[in-house]
Length: 527
Image (cartoon, rainbow, N blue to C red):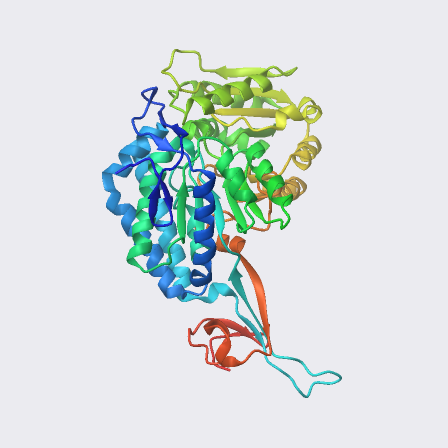
């Protein structure tokens, strides 16, 4: 049941006067539920509870935290059709997408539960004392990862479940031992509250400390600004626009105690189609990329917004086929009128630049909040000269850049901003002839795809979802997969500490039987 209130720890609260509603983009009307924005007092209470909860939660065993994460997954499934219905009403996305994203959310929670139940993720490292070492004795030094403290997670606009209230950031932070305060996204506050209720129930059922989780409503930027500025908040997770992520990053850096902001932001995900592939598979590739560009109305951070090739008949034919195929796909709803407005504005900015040729623009009448897909093309020299063409147009839009030769293609790749993904399409043996281009691409992206599409992010340990700025604020970390837990921890050493006072991960007996590095060797043995 949706109450419209804030979850301050395990208590519902609605002390504020500022209210708002979510919006159904398919029906083009407001939804019924009224949400109350969190007050300064409620924000302070949530942070205080998180600070106090951290003292206990950071020391809870991985096994108990795993029970908590699995209980969250169970409670989300108990929400059943109510969650699906509210998700669809707030996003305009189809039921199949809702069920798939719920499955991904549950899967992420259970994957992190497995990780912390096993326990080796803490990277326990032990160098035992060598008292007779010359010229100086070596002390006993033992290291492991420990949680940072209370984490603020901003719900994402384009993934109401998998990147929001109980999404990857929250799951990873809770797994690490950090309490989480979610700043719910105003576009799907109802979905957020339902999931928050599941987390709260799971926390109570599994005996977690009050304040391990809170969910705060916010219609604008005020709540988020106050949270990031609060001195007891120790890290931030964000998925969204470059403008929003950069603002939070700057705010966190200006604090008396600066804190890390792990923001996943804009990306145009360049796709390089090499000549032989264009010649042999151009028609099929056009169909594939028409579908990828319009998938989810182009509202994926990995949407292929830039396609690059070398001038010639094959590239011209590809552009013709892509333009034809994309117009055969019926437009679909964007997440919110504001997102549609931003799409139209950014699209107009790009198309108003000199020497841009629009090769496909859907022109039939569509329902309110439906986005009309566009394909444009430009020559390589113009693209290099005009950095406005390098910016993301979030939605069903892609630009094909026609390069004079491979040198110009390499230069374009080298001068792009950081990206989440880069894709290389080539036939057998062809890619090796363009090794300089592949190397240039590697320097600009977090993940390189071969003969595929960038849309779709597999949740697995090998996945990197991040990249050089502005794809993310720290390219050393991923926002997807179990390794994303490393964002919420820091290395900590104990020197000459009594064995009985050490955490179980570092004790001689290795009571958790985890894999540790002892004197340079990986082992599960006792010392």
